Image 1 (cartoon, rainbow over the protein chains, first blue to last red):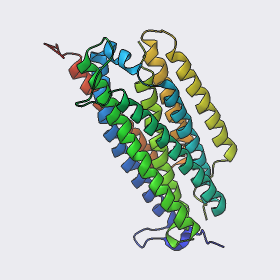
Image 2: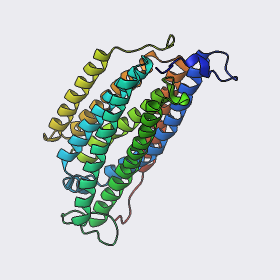
Image 3: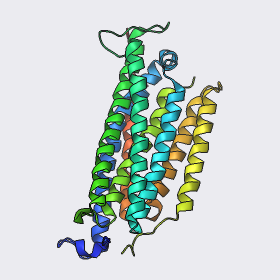
Image 4: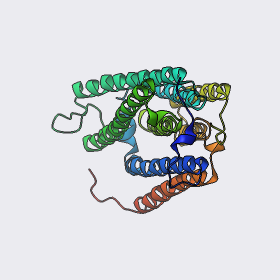
Length: 216
Length: 99
């Protein structure tokens, strides 16, 4: 039914299809490197303040639910698996399988956002959102605790935004693939989306232990 | 069609996934034991191992062109510079007052 031949989509500025594929792939990786530095800035802030205020950070992190954090980790790891299998299906020209794997990835990502919503609304109810309503119940310094939660919301919030963007991009990809649109008839758009999605997973792989499993 | 691109077998993806889940269980388990400085080193090392698995296999970096691999390494390199120089500054500061 659909032609998945990438030969017909060679841009005139490229020598051959191999060069075009490499250019697209390198371009995506360059973007991901900028994203690494983007999140890296927040990680650096976290490292600095955790080293300064370990006692309060340890006490404050107890107010996070490790179980939800673990559930979110499993959801994202599984979504990376389904995404990888979706990219593989795209490479093999199996567009029906590709759509199914992509839909599975979207579903798992939505599950992640639901858990995020549960966690965030719980934080709001317990006055743990930095701002006028912040009330710290622990024994530690309230300023340091508010710093912990500022970092928590900034880092998980930015990550959640990336998950949301991923969901939108994947949904568009599913739609275009289903309608057999020319621009997605080779596997490259799916592969690049996959690279983005795995990056989002990797950020969470580090966020989870740093925020939820602060050791002493 | 996809002559230049190595297609990784599905069973490899499933095995990597299994490893990732096992490593997650270990990370959570370690959090419940008091190991002092190891409570930082162990989960971070495991996180790096998980990230490596995702990068090498799910993102296919193991079979990617050299230029792509160089960019990935460069990203980590610059991240480490940022962490290293930032912490190098802060560990030498004397806090007066604080919160």
